[in-house]
Image (cartoon, rainbow, N blue to C red; front, side):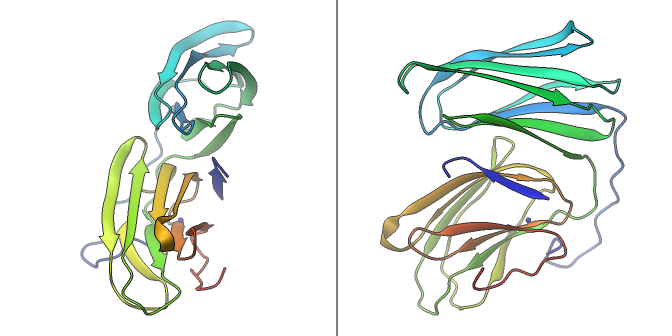
Length: 228
C-alpha cells in the first residue's frame, strides 16, 4: 500500500549483487513528518498507554519539511497518539488530532501533517527491495525535468533529467518503506509537491510529465504505465 498526502513505489536497478536480506526489529518505531507549505508552527505530540503518559515531544518547524524520529516502543500497544499544534501564520488556527496505534513490534508508524490535518500510517520495517523513482515524460522532446526527493528529512535525489524518450524509465533508487517528499517541475516551470508514505518493499513512485507534473504511486507488483 502506498499513500499520498499533502496539498493535494522496480526492484532496485543498476545490476550488481542482490541486496542483503533485512530482518524486522523487535520494537515499534514512531516518527513524525510535517510539511505545511511554509507556515511555521509549534505544538506537542504525546503518547499514552492504558491512560498513562509514556512519551511527549515538542513540535516546531518552519513549514518546509520537518522529520523527527519520535520514539521506539519495546512493548506492543495499543497506544494513543495525540497531536496538538498551532499554525500562527496560517490564520492562527489550531489542530487537535488523536489516533490509536496498535504498536505491533517490527512495524513503524508515521504521523504526517500538513497545514490542514494530520494522519497516521503504519507499515512493516525491513524488506529486501528498495523500489525506484521513475519519470514518464509523455513526449520525445528533450525538455529538462528538475526532480527533488527527500526521504525521512534527507535529500536523496536532486537532479535535472534530460534524457529523451516517451516511455517511463528509472531515474533513481528509493530506500524502501518510509516518508518521501517529492518535488517535480514540468512544462511552464510549474511544480508539484507531495508527501508520499511508501508502505511496501519494492514499491515505486513515478513522475508523469504534464503541466504541472502528476505524481503516482505504484505497488511492487504494478507496472509503471505511460498514461495512468
